[in-house]
Image 1 (cartoon, rainbow, N blue to C red):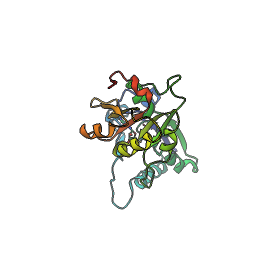
Image 2 (cartoon, protein in one colour):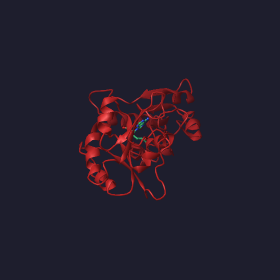
Image 3 (cartoon, protein in one colour):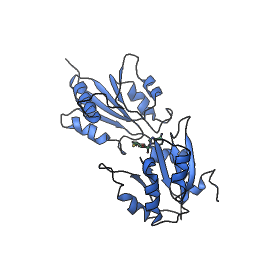
Image 4 (cartoon, rainbow, N blue to C red):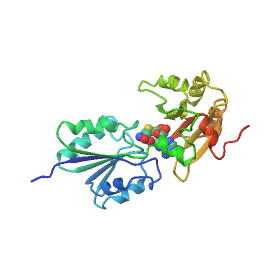
Amino acid sequence: MQKNGKLILIGAGPGDPELVTYKAVRKLAEADVILYDALVHPDLLNHAGDDVEKIFVGKRARQHLTRQEMINRLIVDRIGEGQCVVRLKGGDPFIFGRGYEEIALVRDSGTEIEVVPGLSSSTSLTALQQIPLTLRDLNESFWVVTAITRDGTLSGDLRFAAQSTATMVVLMGLRRLDEIAQLVCQYRSPETPVAVIENGSLPDERVVLGTLTDIAQKTIEEALQPPALVVIGEVVRFHPHFEVS
Ligand code: SAH
């Protein structure tokens, strides 16, 4: 009799292949097939058996389907064949990762589903930089905000976050940093410190520190590229290399 298919959604952490959970490592060994994204470190695939099929789904692979359609089809087909499908996604799969959409695909069919949380870039890259996301008397929350919405406009939540005491952690914001900084300046001091972390937790990591006034220009001068995390708030002042100018 054919065994039942299973979907295991695993968070691959922010980049450094050691920044994954013990459970992620154990579950990778259960896979028949692994579908992995661009931000997943290739070393993580070594936790799977040699004969396991490993499919990179990070770029558009076929013309007639969108990338997400192709991934969805792979998940459904392989589960239908009774395989254990591991879907390996950067950071935490439920934070701007479309993790829910992918489990929802097979939930109704009664497929067994497991989720292994991952360290999100939003909370782990800041810790690696020794930037506290919260600090008593300085802020009462932190917001993890996407810079852009589905239709390409700046997220309206940036404006709300800017009006609070929150540390703002902005994902996918590098290309729009100038606009974001200007928007936040409407509510916070132009001297508010900002950190931009490129390729966080990886050997080629770079960090640019500045203020709302000069950060966009600095990241252009340094030619920073995505993936990058933008951290806005007084807590950035506690980065070991932040200098008061
Ligand atoms: N689910 C992921 C986020 C996916 S959205 C998580 O929890 O981390 C992708 C965005 O995350 C990137 O555009 C960037 O803003 C951020 N990001 C992810 N990994 C990163 C890394 N190693 N360095 C810098 N930013 C990263």
